[in-house]
Amino acid sequence: MRYAILLSILLLAGCQRDVYAPELSDCIAVGEPLTLPDGHQLTLSRVDNGYCPCNANCVWEGNLVAELDDAEGKRFVADRLSGGSPDLMTHVAYRGFTISIDTVGVFPGACDPAQIPQADYCISFTVVQE
Image 1 (cartoon, rainbow, N blue to C red):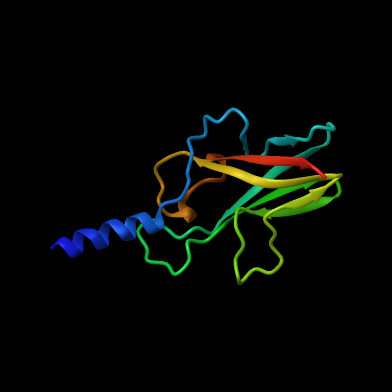
Image 2: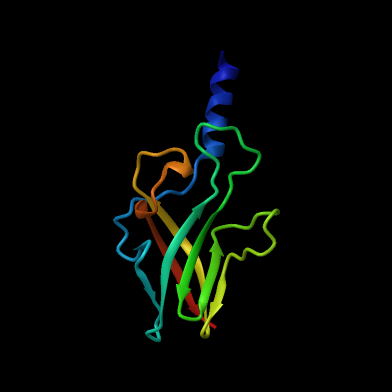
């Protein structure tokens, strides 16, 4: 019995992620602009959530990819790299800045990433001048 409880705790801990409440003052929702220090803007147009669902046993916890758009095209930035996605980067260069995902917030309720509506995401980015 002791081992079953310990195993349950370890399995739950292995699937936990840093999920923050969307009240973060510096996060943006899908459809909102990310304004850079020089005034240029990129719009967070989509979030692709590839995290392992809470109620599943996965070999890897997955990753989350944010799509940032402007008139020049799309840029994709992931919160962590995946061995199966060589084109993804954890940062993207744009007009002399390096942009990366800092925190990801979602409204609570859905445990399966496929069930989370785009409107429920709130992402904060780190922007560093190159």
